[in-house]
Every structure is written in structure tokens, then in C-alpha cells.
Image (cartoon, rainbow, N blue to C red):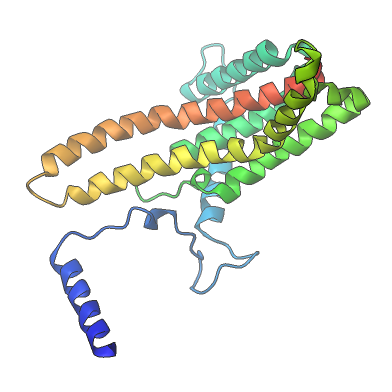
Length: 259
């Protein structure tokens, strides 16, 4: 049996060497930045590096890019002003004036996600938002923040969020259970939506890039990669927008919990 297993392994190895072999999920592996070995709690990894690059890029656009504050704005100043106005209007439209005091946090959240998504589109880079460990922390921070804020601002009246007064009395207990379950599922769906969409797009691009090695289908693969890359640019912004607007919706529930 051992001889047969070894023979089978040799055949598989030769098949890989003689044919097409690529691993779409290898691009999401977390590796130590210095040396080798296991990744521990305080290990500096490729995730650490690209998070740091993301922070530097945000500082470059939002701080250095707007330092002159010219009447005729530069490109970086235009981007910063557009982002500021976009998030400000979003918060005002969704939560009302009460939510504007939380603008700095929501703006920071949006900029981190959108810059991480776009930096991940650079060849040979690493997309930090493709990992559930990153998006889970972001989503959990939003969940805990709005929950604590809801009780601080409204006390026990925050529980009115789960009691649908517009529904018939007989249905209210059932709806309350559904509302409670959906509320505690929020951080899960909030985090998986972002990580799943980003990971799926990058994996599909890697698959088509692998097929591009075959001369027969390489022209089709290159066209497909170009199209998917264009779609991923759109997805990078949309997913940041969706995560941010859902944060605003959850904030509105904390500020105005009554149905």
C-alpha cells in the first residue's frame, strides 16, 4: 500500500509539472515579513505591511494633499474634498444632524476600507480586506459601538428597536425574536460581505491569469482579466460604500431606535 501511495504521489507530481498548475488562494496567505516560521500574535506580516502602507496613503491624500488648501485644488485635494463631502452627505441623509458628530469615525472607516481595496488591486500587493479577521474587527467595533451608544442615549428604550409597534399584537413577539436574531447577525453579515466579495474577485482574476499561460486560450484570458479588473475597481469602491452606509444605518437605529 505504501508503495502504491508513493507511486501515486509521483504521478501527481509529474502531472503538475507537465501541465497547468496555479493556486488562486495562495495570494491570501499571511506570511512573516522577516524570516520564516509560524505567525504569532506580535509577528510582523504582509498584512501589517500593507495596513501601514494604507495608513501612509491616507495621510498622503487627506493631510499632505490638502495642506496648501488652494482655491484651485490639486488632484489630491480634489479627492480629499470629494471624499469628505461624500461621507458627510451620507451621514446627514441617513442619520440626520444627530449623526454628524460621529463623522470622524465613519470617515476613517470608509477611507481605510476603500484604500485597502484599491491598494489590493496593485499587482504583487496584498488585500487586507480579503481576510475575515480584518473585516470582523471592523464590523465588531461598529456593532459594539452602536449597541453601547444605543443604551447610553436611550436607556431601556433602545429595546424598542426589537418591538415592532406597527405590527399586530399577536405577531410582535415572533417579530421581536426575528429582530433580535437579525441584530446579532449584523457583525457576521457585515464582515463576510466585504471579505467575501473582495476575495472572490481576486481569486477569479488569478484563475484567468493561470489560464493565460495556455497559448490557445491566452487572448480570451487576457480580455477576461481586463474586464474583471475593471469590475474589481468598481467593486472596491462599492464594497467600501456598502460597509459605510450600513454603519450609518446601524447608527441611525442607535440614535432613533423606535419602529
